[in-house]
Length: 382
Image (tube, rainbow, N blue to C red; front, top):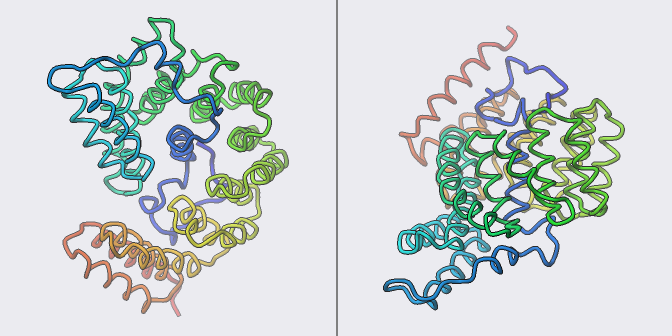
C-alpha cells in the first residue's frame, strides 16, 4: 500500500521471499487480527455482550445439551487464547455442523477461521491463497450472524469487526469498508479504527485521516490508533509527522512488538534505516523471532548493505523452529539467499543443506538454488 523509499536491486532476494516489499496491506490485516483476537484497542466493556444480549443462548438442541454447547464454545476460546487456531477451528466446525443456526457458534467459527488464516500467511508461498480460502469460509459463517443481529437492532460490534476482516482477507475490500462504516464512533470506535485501516489499504489516505482523527478524539491514548495515524501521515507525504506519531505510539505501548515494528518501518521509509535496524535489534529475543519483524529487519539491513546481518537473524529463527520443519525450511532458505547476497557462499551452502535435510522434496529449495545462482552470476568479475 505504501511504497518503499528505495528501488529493488537485482541482487536482493526475490520479492517472493519478502511479500511486504511493495505494500503494507498485509500489515493492516495482521494489525486488524491482533485487534480482534488479542483484545487490543478494546474497551473493558467491549466483549461482544451487545450481541449476546440481543440473542439469548438457546436451550438444548437435538442431542447436544446447552451445557455441552457452552463447554464447546469455552474450549474454542481457550484454544484461540493459547494460539491453537487449528484446534479451535476443528471444534468450531464440528459444533457448527450440529448447531448451524446458532449465531454464537457462527461467530466462534468465523473468529477461528480468521486466526487460522493469520497463521497461514506465515507461509510466503502457499499461505496467501490458503488464507484467502479461509477468509471466504469465514465470510460464509459470519455474514448471516451479523445480518441477523443487526436486523434485531443489536450493535453486534464483534461480529462486524470479524466480518470486515474476513471480507478484507477474501479480497473484498470495498465490502469490508461498507461494513465498518456502519459503526458509530461513540458505540464502536474499534470498528471505526478498522475502517481507517481499510481506507489506507484502499489508498484513501485523506478519508482515513478524517476517520482516525475521530477515533483518536475518543481514544487519544490508544497506540494502535496513533500508529495508524502515523501510516496515514506517511501516505500524505508528511514524514516528520509520521515519525513523531510513530514515536508516540511506542511511548504509549513499549511492550508491543507490532507497534515497534511499525515505527521501525516508518524510520526506514523516511530515510533512517540505521535507526530502524538498531531499534529492532534492541527488542527482546522472543519478539525478534516474529516474521513481520524479521522482514522489516531484512529491508533495513538491505538498505544498509548488510545482508549478512539479516541472514544471521533468519538463521536464528531456523534454529528456534527446528520442531516445525516447514517454518525452519522457510527461515533456512532465507538465510541461504541472504548469505549468498553477502558473498558468504560457505554459509549459504550450509543453510541450503539444512533445508534439504529437513525435506528434500520441498519445491522452494530449487527456487532458492536458482535465486542464488542468479545472485552469484550478477556479481562483478574479480
